[in-house]
Length: 79
Image 1 (cartoon, rainbow, N blue to C red):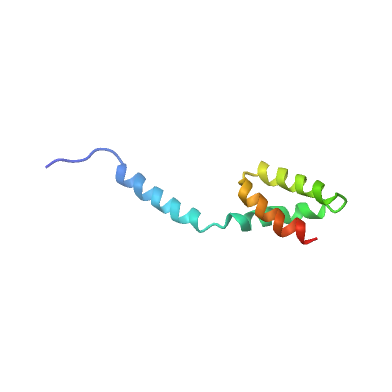
Image 2: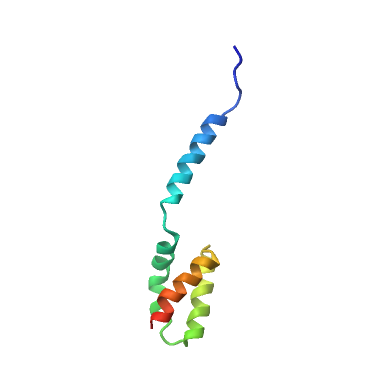
């Protein structure tokens, strides 16, 4: 009887669990939550200034440019 060595099955199962967990997280919603307080401090800036501040803020927190662009379109341009 031949036995496989290592923890390959354990790692594969953990990877699948992590993938299912992170697929449930809505990155856009997380960006909105992160930005909620920040927007209050940006009222004195022009639209372009707010866009720059928001994009820098979200990028420093690890959000992708795609998500940042969507959030800017939904929040800054609403004003």
